[in-house]
Length: 316
Image (cartoon, rainbow, N blue to C red; front, side, top):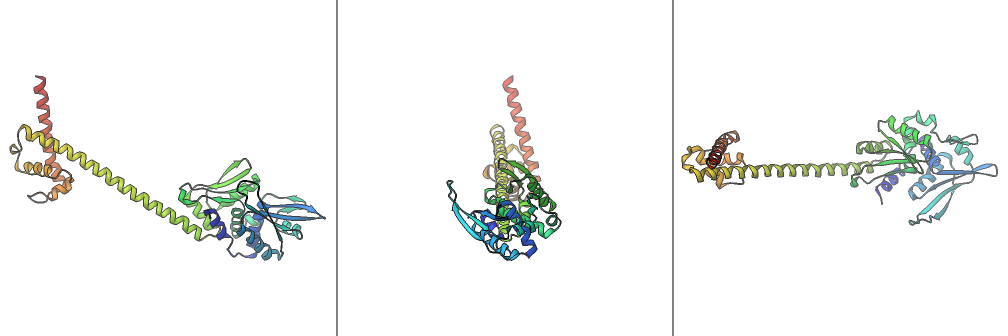
């Protein structure tokens, strides 16, 4: 089961107040419904490929209007050949459509009613229905965070975007060949939307994936930092050893002060340790990193002078 299917399945199990159920049903019918005039009344059809949404439609119609409907099933002719379920309501369709403000007289309305947009709980329920009807969400494991709600009508899509942005979700609109979408790209805003429409398990699953990804990224950053530090230590040690060997070959280490002799020998003996670690194992006693640096600079300065003298000798 895809992550989007998991989200929708959880949403279809939520218990809602009758008036809020109407708002959810309004979105489902406006986005997935169709109607035709037959014997002077409207026959309502609502289409879905999701069995959980099918059960939800039955539940909402019974809860809000105490009506039962029949289901027609047929297979798509495309490669997936999914079952398509059509909730068929032969009687009472006109009353339902007008009560949900989907039908105004004989005209189909594509805008969300002001009654829903002015009521926070109804707005959330409408957005839940809109996601059930035309929503999709990427699995957070893909790291491509994307949630969208598709709508056929531009003004309806605009209403959905405005309702989402009322809650600070920073939703955007994009035109597609077969309609319009309102979408979210931010993982934080997607979590906020899932919370808004009533999911709990899906939200926690999404958050868990983000937490694990952040954890692995932190570990990788630490490992990269440690590797970079190790490379610095190795490069510095190589430079120190080359200078010490140069001093030894030209004038001998015995020509150095006792403290520098001690450091030079320890550096040659322990080429892989850091300066801090080198200071901790000096035979004469622990020395701070700054103290070790001070002595090492003297050795490097001497090696630099020797290199310069050698170069001048060759020129002459």
